[in-house]
Image (tube, rainbow, N blue to C red; front, side, top):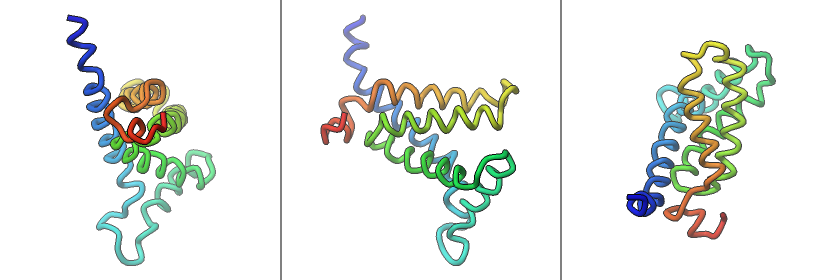
Length: 140
């Protein structure tokens, strides 16, 4: 039985990356892409709104830009298995700060961010696996 699950490991890491990357992109889309798409004068309005929210938490606005881009670009990179360990670590840090500043101590509000944080930690610790651009480009 153990051998069967051992053979599943490359596919399991692929599935984990696909679901995790899609969740990150979905959660950060509104922070980066303005409502209505990328056109006209509202190109930066989504990040500006996110920066304003971050400032209400007592943090500098530039951290909002960094957190939004780490989640958004990191989601795409993790989906592809590119720079997986780096973005896993950066997303872990981003989510720890987010949990501490936004959802803690309400456990119900922290469950989803905690689960995503653990996935980020797993990605940082284990890497992208055999079926990834990291492996193909010998980045790991």
